[in-house]
Image (cartoon, rainbow, N blue to C red; front, side, top):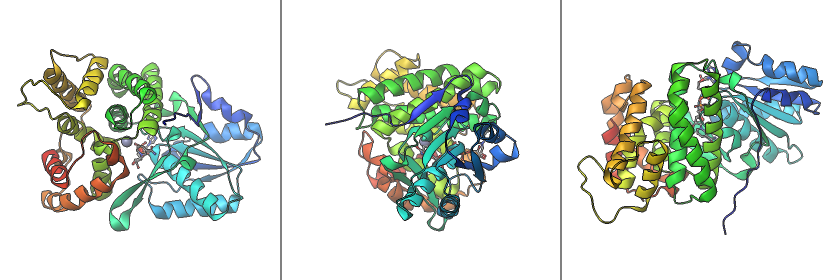
Length: 381
Ligand SMILES: NC(=O)c1ccc[n+]([C@@H]2O[C@H](COP(=O)([O-])OP(=O)(O)OC[C@H]3O[C@@H](n4cnc5c(N)ncnc54)[C@H](O)[C@@H]3O)[C@@H](O)[C@H]2O)c1
Ligand SMILES: [Zn+2]
């Protein structure tokens, strides 16, 4: 038996943030990305809390790829302030941190079960609706995706005004994260009709609006669409899970601090080739891997459907490479700069082992061997 459930209530569209004016809690802990505080964007939340008569404290000790120690700091803040409601505002890192803080605070004190509202300020992770939180362990150069239902936020607020300040490079990385979530969920061994519908819409929006968002911060229509696509892709992979692309990207983030979306974007063309068993030397054949039909559907959704399976998968790969080039995303790890080739090659074996053990890899449509994953890490250098 399968089931499909959306646990998070999603407020979106014009004035979505006004939902905060109707909160009836007495105290809220606002977990905020430092940019949100330094830019003054935090007032969008705290001003509305004041109007609602809600007292609040702000916790902003958030860094990209939040490490365990920041989670511990957050748990202490949550348990000492005992807010009935936690409000996470920021990118995936701030939201993941808040999700982990709530989980561990409740585990330490079962009587403490705060409501959690997630307000994303990047259009990428979909963390506002997922049961995942990615926490890093710098001492072991590892990133762990925590995965359990209790992590899912109770409410999400999608307000495109908050993403206007996102710099072009972050728009590119996070936008390609959305694309990767949708494509991986679509070909996942756990996919189903509900996740497929969400993934198709997310990919369609990325095709129409990601470059527009990248080229013009103030294209509010494109930003609103990408903010919704991010959430749709989050719902898709929350149901269908992800694949090897994310399993490998997590290791690149943990070992070389490559931003999550950038690592996914670099990997995506190579993973499509690997999963489909189609590369530039392929000739047409009578039987294809089952994921090929799905990649062809994604290509059709993006408007690059071609003559046959081989040319269509090639067109999809070229499309992803085109998007990466248009948004100045490096096409290989060496293109990023600042990473030593020797260190990278030395890390490949341990990264391959960790990628195989990563929870995301389990639902990849092709079961990879360690040798194949090492080969892929070499290819993307
Ligand atoms: N929980 C999930 O389901 C899930 C899914 C995918 C990725 N992740 C995790 O999420 C993290 C990545 O999240 P992200 O891509 O949103 O990046 P992020 O949260 O790390 O933010 C990236 C940078 O953008 C800045 N920023 C955020 N909002 C901004 C705004 N409106 N204007 C200007 N700057 C802004 C931040 O300060 C930061 O410097 C990684 O740790 C990744 O592993 C989680
Ligand atoms: Zn991702």
